[in-house]
Length: 251
Image (tube, rainbow, N blue to C red; front, side, top):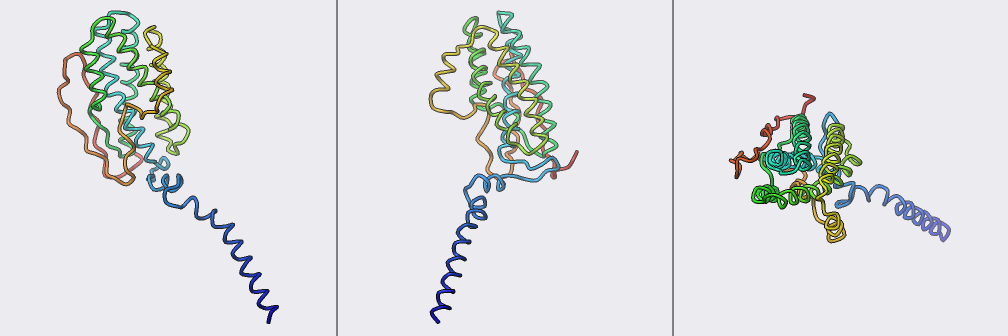
């Protein structure tokens, strides 16, 4: 009897040990709140691979970037007193004309709705440019845009590294090329305050200024905002984004 009892205890102990070893393997990744669980919860299937919440946020941010940087570029081409800043404006116009067409194409294929107006912060920057004159205008133009591009640059790298969606990856490639070109041409004006950028980077971290926080997984996309007249005739917005289709197809 004691032998059977001892054998039973051994079996129970071995079972508990094996269960303890296997528990982290099946429970950790699926546990609510873990990175893997959050990734699965926020992703939807598409013909081009899973589309995560971060992917969707990135597509929106690319559109938002064009909604204020394209008008800013057009404004610089028309009013900047120096060749260097006018050239930077031309690069902004060329880059975001192409990138905005690309993001609208990608969003249509992925059934994503895009905003049609810049954020309040971006509109504030455009108003700053409009109010400024001469050297003050050029300094604001170079530094505000350079700081914004620096923050977007790191976001593009993160998405390019982590996305599992081929359309988003290709868009990140195009965004990376465009953003790096704009960073270089803004720095070529000789007006960028690198000390201020370094101080800001060393301080408290802030979110990218080109868009809202990631959407809530499973939530319907917000409706597109109607275009409103620009505050001055010195710049205009890119074309409106089309509404998403009712389903996701290969297009």
